[in-house]
Image 1 (cartoon, rainbow, N blue to C red):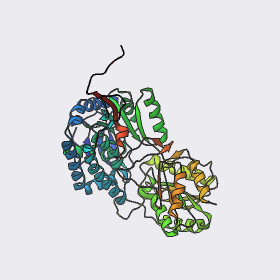
Image 2 (tube, helix red, strand yellow):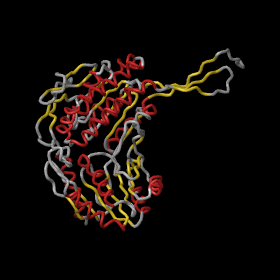
Image 3 (cartoon, rainbow, N blue to C red):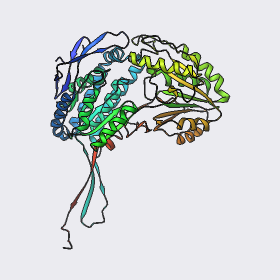
Image 4 (cartoon, helix red, strand yellow):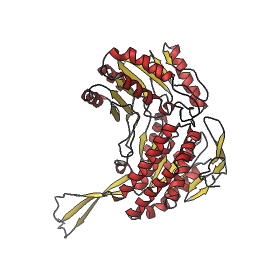
Length: 493
């Protein structure tokens, strides 16, 4: 099967296994559709467990060579990959828009993140791999040594396909592991094949990165193969909490460690002394970037009552004016949602909330394939949209009597990924941050932030473990205790 290449549209591309583009063992393919136009962008290999096992075997075979490369050679791969990715910027932005409906601004965010990720990963080759430990045993030298684990399975989502696949792959590779990545069926190119192209061109040895794609509804076979294989030592997953829970249950049966970055129902708190104009702008960005299809997006906005009426009116007016339409148009803010199922779910949940007494302040009427930026208020707790993550351009605004009440209501959620506090008193914001049960808090900013070196992850049902190059060693290496004696030891028998 043909290499995907820069001319991936209208092509047929397969898995990338052992440094080669190969067809699915079954010979099957599936169409990769544009969420905006509906056109078939490419025909993609529809893989299964057997394909995954072949990729795992290739990664296992490549591990001794890749992990033993001198640090300078590994560093060169990542620096070269960063240059290649940067040079292909315009084509990648076009691919993100075509395949995932990603607008220009969020596309640029993804490309910039990916380039920084690769450049920062390059320095991991020269990080210390252990430390000397004091011992009470005379004549003994003790060390704690970090070693790559081997094969890492990576399961990546479609919504920020370039960055989240990159995050799933690059950190483990930089630590000397090899990787098998399963991109989403909605983003097989920008979440999988593209990374294979770039890293292979940069000089990554054959088998160090392998990509297995699958048709819609057929992820289970590939994921189960990763979890069941004794050759796969770690699995990382970014996606929904229900799917993450199922993966964790299966991983537990195999005593396999997993890193889970799951759903978020992220609160944004506006205190009574906040700068109103800034709060409106920050909330608009935080709720509707990439049409709300980012795990960190603000889903609930709590505003203290002295500011609530004016904030809500200005916020709803700004949101109602957001341009909606073609993601290739640089002026578009709200592009298409990823597929018809997502559009139907958004419509159903908003209608249910209205039936239960909610008011729509902006949006609320589908514009297929888009759903306009939507603001709800007076949403009862029993509404489905108030209980979990609704992945799309819908946000709930609620007036509260105090910031303490906002924290209490925010912490009532089972999810705990990200939060933000906008306040005129940063110290007060830090105090509120310390009480929020989430993995990430931004004071005087909205919740959609990420950098390659930061400890990214949530608490409660938003998952466990942390991504981030500065913290990847905790997840994707083994700590080995090693001792050596410089003299013989006396034994009692």
